[in-house]
Length: 70
Image (cartoon, rainbow, N blue to C red):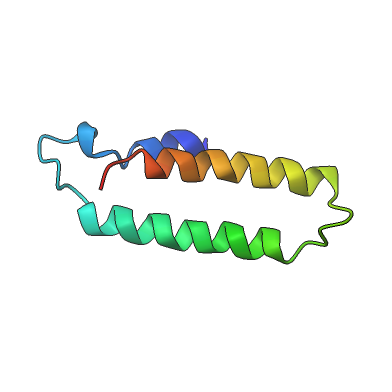
């Protein structure tokens, strides 16, 4: 599950809170851009239910990344 994978990057999972600091920041930014671009390419008037579900699921993954520390 992608949410569980994102949570593995949490700073609290390591004795060193700076563990993967730069990588977490980079991954958060890259994932946010990917999701924004994918959603932005959809027609706003008639978004298919599958796209709404995809966007919702990926918003949860992004939220998990945001909660992974600095």
